[in-house]
Image (cartoon, rainbow, N blue to C red):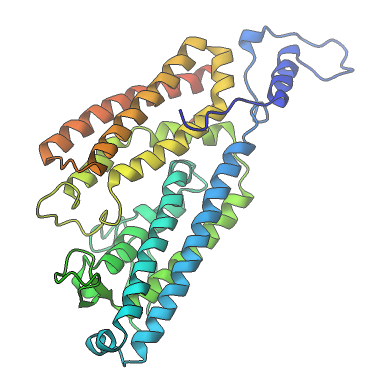
Amino acid sequence: MLKWMTCSLSLVAALLLVACGGAAGSAAPTVAPAAEAAPTETAADLSAVKDYARDNSRQMKAGTAALAETAAAYYELVAAHNFDYAAAWAADGPALAQLVADAKTQWTTAHTSYELDEGIIAGVPSLTFYDVWIDAGPSAEDDPTGAYEWTLELPDGRRLPSPGNIFHSLLEPIIWGTRTEFVGLPVDLDGDGTIALGEVLPEANVLLAAAQSMDGATGEMLATVENWQPTLSDAFTALAVMIPTMNEYFEQWKLSTYVAEDAQETAFVGVSRLFDINGILTGLDFTYGNLATLVQTTDPALHAQIADGFTDLRSYVGDLYQQEQNGVRFTAAQADLFGGEAQAKATALAGQVSQAAALLNVTIAE
């Protein structure tokens, strides 16, 4: 299991202090049995979880900053041709093709770092806003009452109210050209004589605005993560909330171009949703690894069940992703079957995590 962690000697010392009861010099300390000692907020060293979230957020910020620079260069080149995309392609085709390739790489870099963080960002109540804004929130068009209200302001003066999350409602459809209103011109980017999915010149105004918004939002998220003081409740809440979300992700995978023959989904085209699930489970696995000693001390058998559950679920999803990478094309019916099996594994695992939190007297936030 990736990046399993054990608690430090400071954790052991803290647990011993709790078990002994009272501070040095108190008159008649009450000694509580070790089995009844509940962990305090300082009983686990959660600094590793914060470091993990912060480091991935920093890598994401590097990717979004590079993407914003690429979008600015692309905008300037297209603007030099008065936003005549055919003229720009005829005059500067190789340069434009390279900028689009760079944008795809930088989007993927930022997105990969976020997926490794998403289990924490989306699962911790004080951080979850950023998941809505950056990665998961619907547009007002898709959900008029549930969309996060914000406005994307374009350089040409247009305004897009409540356009959805920046990764999948905006940047991915812009860069891969899955929404016609975001396409400047379909072109043969790789010169093979055909125009395949993803071979477009993005509309420069919306690309620049979205890339700059993503970099700004990521900077805000990073600052929040750097100031975050994680608690046991944060960690267990993230696990309990984010583990049992397999049905949603597998449904998105089923509707994406990676499964559907005639996909209508405009997102989840840059990378397979299976890759995203692997990233989310990696972060959750890491988080539990930092809590493992607490659980093992309280209930060794329960800890073994949770550890085995993570191994089983991650192996299950990882095997599907590897098959896909090897050229296997799964059907929608298979995607439904796999999603049901993954959800069953995840539901059982989340229940065990919640049981561990209850044994440790740790509150899971609603």
